[in-house]
View 1 (tube, rainbow, N blue to C red):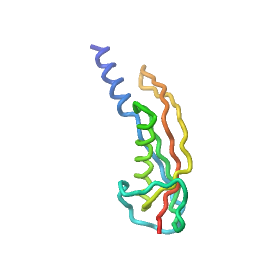
View 2: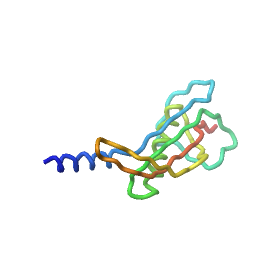
View 3: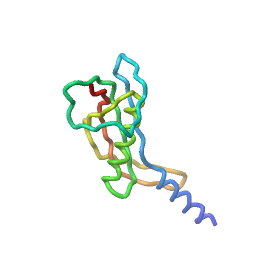
View 4: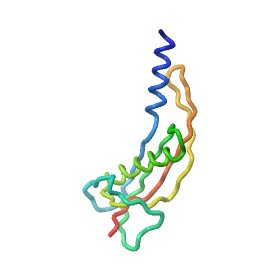
Length: 122
C-alpha cells in the first residue's frame, strides 16, 4: 500500500511541476490589465511603443522542449497582461535545470526560461 501511495505522489509531483513567471514594472504609469491571449510576440521592438516592464516565463517537465517553450511563453504573457501590455519582445530563451525534492522522492528536470519586455505597441 505504501508503494502505491508513493507512486501516486510521484505521478502528481511530476505532472504538476511546470509553468511559472514573474514581472517587474518599470513604467511610471499604471495600466489596466489585458487579456494574455491577445498579446503579440515580437523578436524586435516595433517603431512606436511604451515599455511597461520585464517579464519572465519558465517551464520544465513537458514531453518536448517545444512544449516547455510554449508553456513558458504562456506564463510570460500572463505576467505581461498583469502590467497592461498588448505585446512582448523576447530578449532571451535559456535552458534551465533544477532538482526537486519531495520527501524521499527527488527529480532532476530541465526546461526553458524566457525573458522579455512587456510593451504597449502604439
